[in-house]
Length: 612
Ligand code: F6R
Image (cartoon, rainbow, N blue to C red):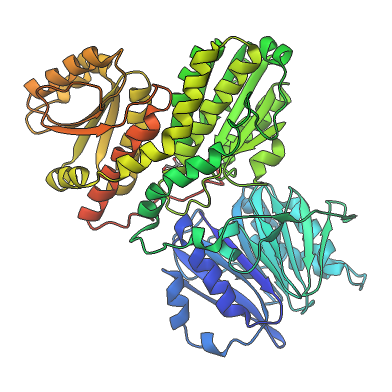
């Protein structure tokens, strides 16, 4: 999705802006551009294609300004083209704007502005914004310091939809204005300089101190100062949040791709997510103070999320139901928000989101809140939108995840959900002490077991080389092995563009086995000793029909008759997906590499889906 960067300070702005955009490339985009305030005019440079192509534009080296705005566009309204890329200017070339989000009523606004004599050069919804600001700026006959702020505020009052906007104006050559509603934006605080970004990694190499914006806040930035206003232009105070992500965590660090680096970072991500939660007697989770009485009153838990995060919820359903004896429903956020779910104040709703900015997940949370349900957010990004909406927030500590395909965030979510389930069970006093001890020990030793799995990559790479030309593949499993197979199948689709389906093994005979024929590839996960006999029978059924099977089993499970087997260390069924998903992540990775695809930036996908 689109990315935003901004700078005002004493250094040359254009390299900072382009560098910031390069760091946002992982979000997915089709064009890029910057606008800087050069002496008495705003200069816009933009292009379809890669951010690096901005360096080739004539005149880019002549830019001297120390303030500017920048954008990577992921086309929504109008095809990818130079004309449609941002920044956009108003008709008088006085206001430059970049925008993330969607203006839902842009047709109506465009018609209104056309009637006022404005002309439009692009097909975008964004172009109405600078013209609307110009319209209100000209209408305002007062000439004071707040004139630009008022024009921006009035324009925003007319906008319906979601937006994060940066504005540069020749009327205020030492100021920049930004505003957000339902689209992420942060301000990075420096010494005599300030930064703007839609995502923290864009400016992490310049500052660790951030102001996190809330909806409908308008911000005025100068070199020395950042002033925050509410919708009525009343000044408000905001706290600085320090982010402890190292710069190196947003670098490839010698790995060929971010995805590979992030797969190998999983032992550390799990260690940091577990932190000190299991250290002293009872489990403690910072930010949570649930009582036994409250948890006893909960009649249902909803786990709501999208994509990979939803798959983490599917694994966790078993943990909550088996340990806490509370019924759990796992819901896709985009479905949940529109299906009038049965929720009330006895429902606990949990939202899982790596970015904390996924539009559907946030909307689902707002809906549940409006119906009186308690809301708990799990995110990887401190201060992200979802954590500011929720009643309670807890964090995975995976560090920035740059590759579009989620890996370390998923395993960190699964481990945190496990700990949450154990925390509830402990509070409810319904878990056997020895079992609890064993589950805690299993989690504490998990990072070293992940390290073991990561030592055995060759057989996965070899198998990937054998099957990378296939058009279809199948993933099978039972219980949590099925839940993790869904994630394996998603990884493969995302980065290798191979169609794949995941089925609960017991479902095979109810239809999908009709697709199994000579040479079809099947990835079968069988780590649960209680279910393994049944799973092996299912695998035999596909082998008999000519399937090539890669089995992922734990070391204690016998696998007579199977040729390709990846063994993972034994652990309990709740967290075995954290180990078994790793061969699947690597399998998808190696296939993508074998096909020569862009692993980190798969086609059509964006890292955080901030529009519906
Ligand atoms: C897949 C992937 C997506 C995200 C989904 C939710 O690899 O990354 O399916 O899991 O878009 O994103 P978050 O977790 O940021 O809400």
